[in-house]
Length: 418
Image (tube, rainbow, N blue to C red):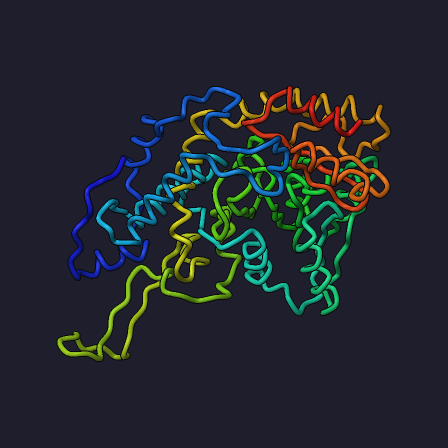
């Protein structure tokens, strides 16, 4: 529901509000959760929320945008056109979405910062800990995001002691993690749910081991947030980040970084910008108050004051608010329960057709992957002709159903692959 346009004066408080520096008003969030957006009733499958052509089983690549999300973004575009058809509270939208996301992963809103992407978040943690250019010991695994593995390879070339854990039986053994995290390890970096095969780490067990030896843990949660239940406080995770265009059902160019409240002091700001400030004043221009320096600045002490720098992709935020509202209304557990029979059927049927299982049989993540020699050349055209969209690589393929898929579509892809 649109709110009347706010009138701003030139006071410092209102200027800071426009910059997104003032606290979020809890009443707004309570109203959103208590009064879901039109079209959200929590029923599954949610086909009526989308306009998907064909059989789309590739949400792990990018999740289709819902009609409600697109409508919210269109309203923002009217605001940007200044055509009088829409008003927008940009500051309120940002704070609402951040608070909804915090609720989704059981974080405090002050522990969450906006970032442009998952990889930016991981780089901010690595830089904030002062790891580049040192001989710090870092542990990661082969199921981590390939861009992240490139990051740690670059650090290794500059002196870091990086250990890469290899998979066994389509999983990363907790025993191998235990052996790799030696005393003196600075950081353990994993993908909570792997983009490769959907393998899901036991985050609490990993954090317990790491913390017992003085190491910190970062998790890439882009393939997990919105798809599997996450409780950052219960797991003990120190840092995690994600973009919003996958299972959060948002758009490109925005994401979230979580930093456990008692870990924030361990990080240094590696970038600087006005969104880190809670106040600033000048002593240069007419009618300014005198001061010892030309300009004074006051840095904030929340996570967002460490990592938010400048202008965000504001257009994507209203749509994300709709999606987060949907996820909280429907429940990630309900979504996972609805999806699981589809994952199980793929796991049961495709190996009998000659495809090698790459995902643990007991997996409850949204991704299932199979290996097949020369898969792309053999399958791509056949799938396209059948109107099926899955992720096909040279020697493997990945299927990732979501809330709009049905068992009939799973049968369809099985028939085509056979």
